Image 1 (cartoon, rainbow, N blue to C red):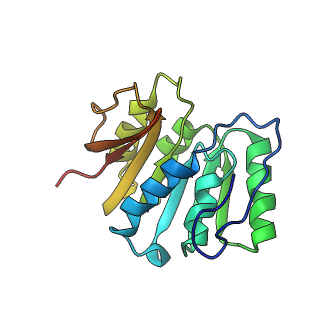
Image 2: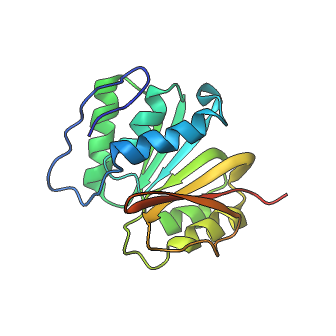
Length: 179
């Protein structure tokens, strides 16, 4: 895996083989950030990375200038790897949390400008993520919730659904607070 843009552009990060992860591809990541760069000033963003895995998306946000990241994953080895990688990158504003994402969302009260979720593709409760985020009111008024999922999966019934962009077998569905 590599960071595709920003301060650490081109930096390769080798995750341990024993992590239960499926990192977002470079092609999909680049397409996603092309959308985001037209909507946000990264330096002002507060990011929540759910099902953070290797931290792939967190590193990309930080490399592009984000100053505050919260990464949540239930696997302690994933969170340890993210912590070690942030230490190597000398990034200190990461809040790393070992927790089940659904439990975390039910108790979270901070607001985020971008919430990115990359759950296991076979997880049956993926659309519930959008419902919980909207019910807990943790997305800012202009913010995006972005859920990565298998392209064959339809999660458009989640609260605040806007649109889906597909990149091969992976898709990103975007959700916003409805005005």
